[in-house]
Length: 226
Image (cartoon, rainbow, N blue to C red):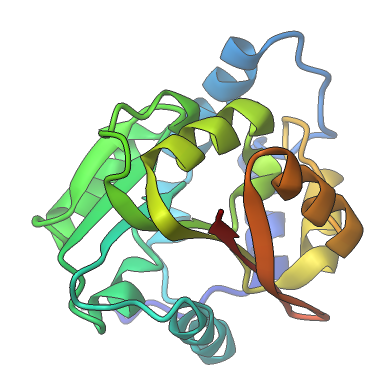
């Protein structure tokens, strides 16, 4: 059995170019088209997401999850889970339940194979039909720039979070990495917001920021429902 090498970002970009999958971001006219483009793109690169992450990225993912202060009684939502990169770090804290959603059915198939106890939903998080006040923490790791309708997403997250529940926006490669992706992926990506931008947005939807980190290779925001 051939051992897989850790992901190298520059090599991945070159490989996607060879596959004809990377093009300058195109203007999308509606959310349905935007989500469809993302679904098709990520369905086509599941194999890349299954490669090992570099040790330094894994360490940052571990750190991101640790900052959320998960308790054993918590119900966790992992938005844009992909193939479940964040789930092993969440499992370390033995939460009551993990729920994951993603647009890509092929990504979620890998999640179910690796983590059969995780409940999965293939849909836009703004449409996630969980009960009111049913989750404790919602993670948006390496996915916030991909969220097409952020206001509707935050309204739904607020509804599903328990009183005092938390939302985490994070990226283990940081702001500059997202700016690099904006020039290559075949759909528009937003930038990772600075403190003033995310603070203003969260306040509109009933969240208050409790922690904010913006480093070269780490972006992290933790906000609480008030």
